[in-house]
Length: 565
Image 1: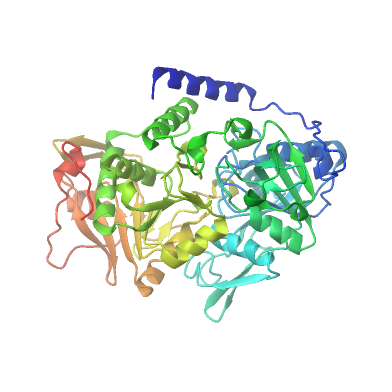
Image 2: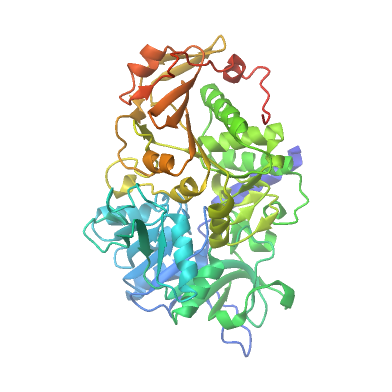
């Protein structure tokens, strides 16, 4: 990345930050003789009280911000629309830090029920739930995608093994309600499996790059398709309303129509509609589109600088880098060329960085749960998109592909316990501390090999010295006797023949029929003092009593090389 490009990215980010709250909900782009084209307030005025409104997108991608703002303003002025059920299968809130997300609907009386797979980013909704003013429901992201897809075919439920043994299973946990608990349950046990439901979608709202003058919708230069088609088909099948928010108008091209005008009730053209966070459709970034000729290295550099400027991504330490190298080594030992691979957020993103730097990403297929396939998953504010993607499908289509052929998933975790169970969904008490599983339950159900990566403890102090790891001060254990919530069932994983590894600062553990066994020890770690005496978790050692040591090169990084076995 040149200095000139760096200056351009800095200018872009600063300009966006200074103007991100700018909007004109009274803007109206119309086309004579086509009543489908209307202003944002005109479109959302058609939403009836009590509607079930489904959105599309992931991260900061596909926000239909002008529609959210218009709904909020109308509600504040008139009290309508009200008592809405809102659905967004993925995390596309702003954590209360930025305007224009679905959190704009987080007002008492406006949104009174909320469904999502990943709840952590929707802070406005979580606060309402803690106040007793909103019903919070959580369903795995892939399951929600399939349910919405099914509504387009007239189906009302889905019978699946996804979620068995986890908190979604009413025999184990609370099922779908997060808060309050004593509300309608949207999952039930049936013949040893789980049957999920969703309320019928009556309004679909999504963001797309463009429309032609007839009202046909186009996705050329989009960063993702996500749930756009499925929510529109579901709303149409249920006799509901479909609203498309686009950035500009193009000439008709029958070969590129994504959604025909006959499936759209309202088209809202608004010039500031974004391709992804900070990037308008009118000035899209080609790196996020299929057919991009930008070198991936250039895209990586630009996004890294943009995220650092926005202070979105955490600053990693030498200890984090060492853990990422250990996880990447475990990954390379358990993955074959040509594998379909899912990489989660957080520390797994550091593994993705190492795969990129080693060139190994070229021999596997990476994807995001929004349906972006190939290239390199984008980090930070751009999460859900990819740098130089090869193909785009819808969320439902990518989850179908996962259930058919997902080889490996590498994921973060909050807690692990003696039975190999993992918690990623519950950070603490109250809705405000609830994360949700996102696509985690789907990916761990579908993948043949699962690699969890996590720091060994919360807090404390770890230091690297002399090619070894030294625990200077113990913190709070993350490997414990029983997790606070089961998002991944070790027992179910064993029953379905999966290989499961847990990578930490002290070593690598593996799930076995006997329990969780330490199979690799990091140099500098004392098994008794640093592991067995510290962790409440029941940890097994190999029957030989000898635990193989991790190569010191992995710890130090000096001369480290990553390669498939």
